[in-house]
Figure 1 (cartoon, rainbow, N blue to C red):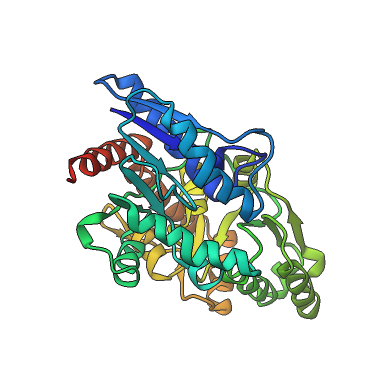
Figure 2 (figure 1 turned 90 degrees about the vertical axis):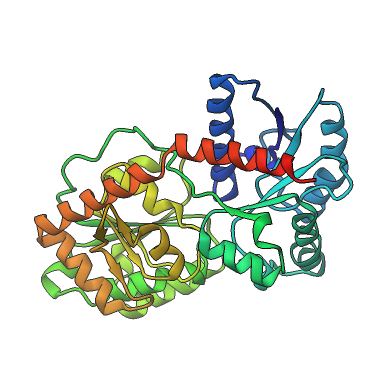
Amino acid sequence: MRVVLDGQALVGGIPTGFGVYAHLVAEALELLARRGEGFAYTVLRPQPTDRPLAAVWQRVWWEQCLLPVQASRIPRPALLHSPCLGAPLLLPLPLVCTVHDLILLDEPPPGFFARQYFQRLVPAGWRRARLLLTDSEEVRSQVVARLRMPGERVLAVPLYSRYEGGARRGQPPQRPQFLLVGTLEPRKGFATALGALAQLPQHLRGEVRLLIAGSPTPHLTELKSLASRLGVLGQVSFAAYTPRLDELYRSSTALLFPSLAEGFGLPPLEAMSLGVPVLLSGIPVLRETYGQAEGRNNPGIFPPGDEAALAALMRQAIEDADFAARLVAFGDAVARRFTRTCFAESLFTAYRRALAES
């Protein structure tokens, strides 16, 4: 079996979102190839490899024109895996697509062509696929319902941490610092974290710092304005994505993940795999992945948007060493469940299932 991987998300600079997932897939394919058993793979990347496909027309040109031509030159390919965005509509190969979430169907980028791409062309590729992969059962149920896909054609394959096996955090920083990771969008719930910071007791409020690491958007102005109104602007820092995100995790008291909408929510798993406490919102998809592990309930979940509840957990993570240790132990249990090996095996099963479809 030779799998062809659409590597458009592997080009450019620091991988974010789709790019991280594509790297996870590529690592899993390499693991399967080293195992032998007749498995091989080829990654096709647009040129040049140092610049991402930022514009919609560039993505369409790659997906519908250049990618099919390159794939046709691969000897005896079994199937094409499109790990993000669109897929070729006319390529005569079995197709597997990953659908991370349906957020872009409801909230596409501005512009007529962007709306047509995300709301029409991308779903058309998904419907052509033999098998759709999702990162969670929550998104799988949404895909089945909204896209009217047969349940047997949609399979949930949970992710793993790219920092699996990495150096663990030692002692927490002397000065409390909470980290938030993600593109600066309202759905990430960063405003909830700012409100929670403002509600900390006075003796802590002046000491605690928030670091928000993610791609800037116009929402940055709104967040800074809110922080100023709450009187905490001086305690909040903004940073772009970094290739050493693991260092930011390890330098944090805890990761805050107050998101209001996700397809999986990978940063909590990355932090947990490094021994970092995590406080996260109880939206359904995060409860699915992080709500329970090895018979234990997650002590770090708070109601979505509840600033007071998050503030209480932040204070507890700072002042209660036993609570922080319980968060770390729970994270270890979660990380043991989601591994690179499990992900690779699930991908292999999915590929065989797609090829078995007539």
